[in-house]
Length: 341
Image (cartoon, rainbow, N blue to C red; front, side):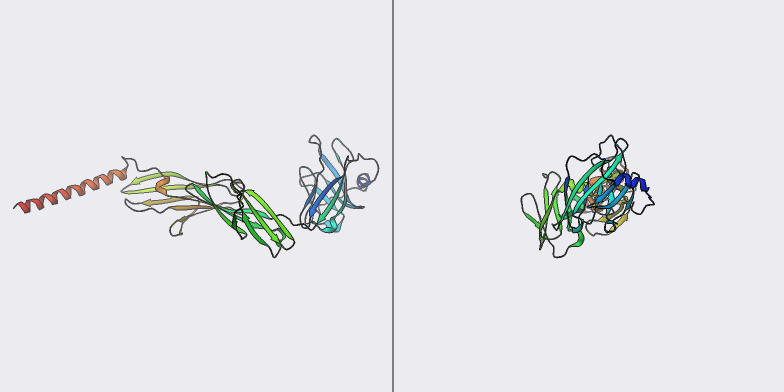
């Protein structure tokens, strides 16, 4: 990490930064970056070799030294790059973030591996004022029956002003002229690609994603399962469980009634009781992740299996109906006797 207590020896720096004995790269690599964006200088180390240490230069100045580790130990010499340099734990390739126009120039690195000493790479970087493509995030997926509503959000990096957005689909139909779009789609529908276009005074840029696959990566699917149904004394008790796919971070659950929107429970488990002839409204389970949420609507009676013919509830209903039928027959008999008399 930058600022780590790495103290490379003077001899190491001399060995790494001295000109002369090194194996030159076959071709100089040209890289292009966009103002405010990032760029990575690939070392292309063979898979059978392990990086040990290296030294980077920009134009004729020492830039940074790096030593293998988790995290890598680095020492930055160029003050204008402090806070903007990153190294991958795997490839040890250099990344420069928040690019500036003055970052344009020639870059070179000398490094050694466990099987090779003084390997050499050269790069030329050009930074332009071009527009970065907008980023798309899938905020939520709300499913009901065989269809889902996908909510996507589009944004320009670095918070640029005077930006207008529009969304279009594969058929080039305009779906929205806002940064947020809500797209309903059935499960059986063909894969649809959607495009967000950001328009700025200095140009336009766009990003396209495949709707279902993109949201599936960002928002784990939420399912509801019926754990149990028990019936006694004329009442059935339903126990349902909400399950969200793994994504990392804490997941918070809530249950709401579809018709009223009232939160009836928090947590992954919902227990409800219903008496005969009572209506049980559909419920929605929402799983909230750190950066998104997903929900699913279901009717408990549709989700959980119906009452078996010999269940206590059905037996109590049968006894109740038989009792009322007997009373009705007795009343009709008494009425008929009175009429005959």
